[in-house]
Image (cartoon, rainbow, N blue to C red; front, side, top):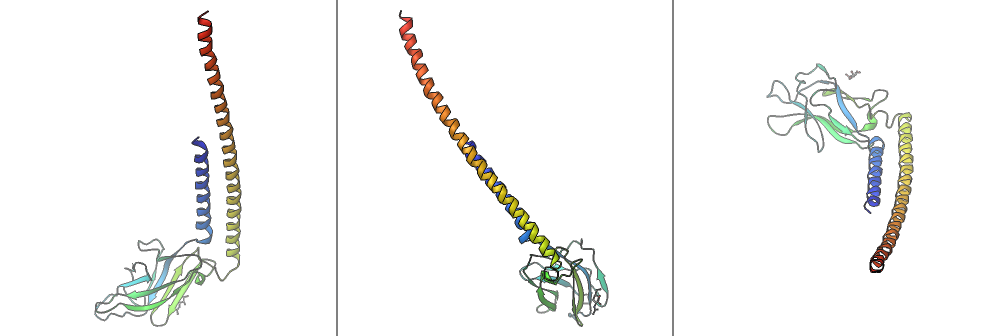
Length: 218
Ligand SMILES: *[C@@H]1O[C@H](CO)[C@@H](O)[C@H](O)[C@H]1NC(C)=O
């Protein structure tokens, strides 16, 4: 009696899992953005000898760049530093981000603030160079973001992947539903048979009682 609903619930969980995988791998794929290289051309806080530079996207935490201390020096990163990645970008959505410098008095200074878009990352490596005269020159990396708008090859491949996942999950759903129906029918038949058996047993027991009463007294 418990088996049939359990089966369909398992089915449902599998379908949900499959769709989640589909969504994660395709439609809402995340891309980690790392900083590969930065050079600042200026500092804004006259009171401090070394600047405190950070990167931040709107609504997110500050990502401090503890190594960036001097202007006109190129700092390169492996992408594995403790403060990396800078942010995550979803498939199509841009974020408003920027480089800032903490200020001892008043609000923080802005190197630059701009719309950070997945489509800005160029194939083949998913590199994006942002340069602002007299402020900074930074190179970002996002291998998963590359070419969302600049190359037609990658999105096509991605689309195909999504299609395959959708087809597989559809087939799986159909099989699951079919299995649930068959399971339910089987369970119903079993129940009917059991009921019949119990019914017959009732008669047999009745016979036994009759036998006992009838035969024993002879
Ligand atoms: C900024 O950095 C990139 C990458 O190293 C370099 O190719 C480019 O020439 C730099 N641009 C300027 C204006 O310094």
